[in-house]
Length: 139
Image 1 (spheres, rainbow, N blue to C red):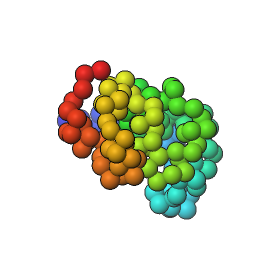
Image 2 (image 1 turned 45 degrees about the horizontal axis):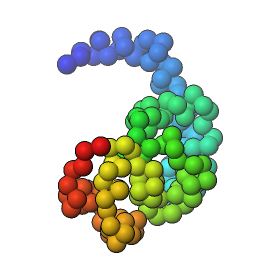
Image 3 (image 1 turned 180 degrees about the vertical axis):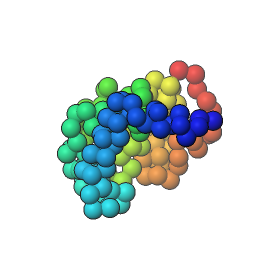
């Protein structure tokens, strides 16, 4: 466990000060009215669009959004108009997973029935339930 002195030393580094400054700027832009966590999708996207490229990259790394196949979606192959449409629907992430699955998820998606696909898109059945029903599939 680090001592208070060690933590203060780390906090005094230029990198830590810059990181803290970026975090404060992001907080100010996204949560200026204390409503960030209750924003609807379109308002949230609007607020995210106010971030600079540096702030957006920082937030993505901090939240883990920059991981390959984050949330089991092949982001490199998602068409921008489809992504925009998915942002506006209730189960948009499910549509992204179904239509642009990560390589590890693709064999499962290829095996599910159309009824299970519809239930998944509507939120009736979860991805974990599909995995349990169809078994883990090797990519």
